[in-house]
Image (cartoon, rainbow, N blue to C red; front, top):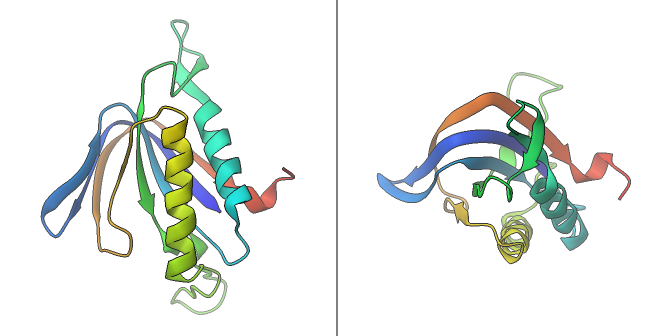
Length: 150
């Protein structure tokens, strides 16, 4: 699984003109799933993200976690994170998991975060979504469960 994490001052997601999710301060997460991903990958990402210290303390150092700042999460499924652009000009999405597997692991990931006590808002899987947010910092991190030994 792959996540692009962006620290946000606020965020919302709209589907077909209807706002379906919004958060105040926290993380906007773009989540991609590939064929070989399992629940272990989802658990790894949820654990890593929930403990990241990327919010400033009183001294301006990144020492505070999402829990410390009572932040929320806007989680968006994004198969394009597994787009391959090495050949040609149009992305190849062969590495993205099939929708059934991707949705199952995406939902499992969100459940793990909720079990850790976070408010997790989402878009709608498989739909065209408009995501609006104010990037705080900006702070953007990429987390890939396949590239680390866990």
